[in-house]
Length: 75
Image (cartoon, rainbow, N blue to C red; front, side, top):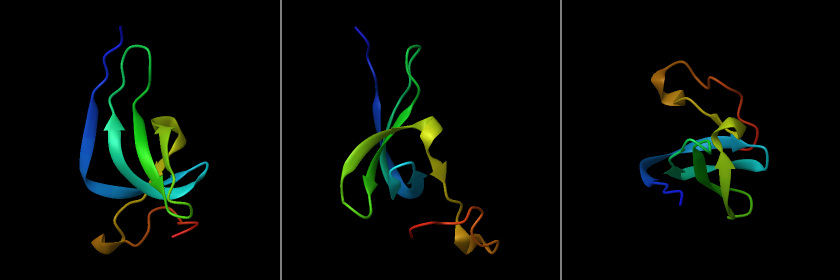
């Protein structure tokens, strides 16, 4: 039996995924057999999907005075 922990992200953040831009809401902790995954709500469809950590890019905070650290595509 594999036991995994789900963490609610108290300050959700924007992420870029292969299937679109969205907000990361939860983190599923990884285990010996799996990578950590994020539960993401996609902006353009409202769909909720589970995305592997290797498939997302996390935007930096543009309010820190340095602007966007990666170029947003759909925000």
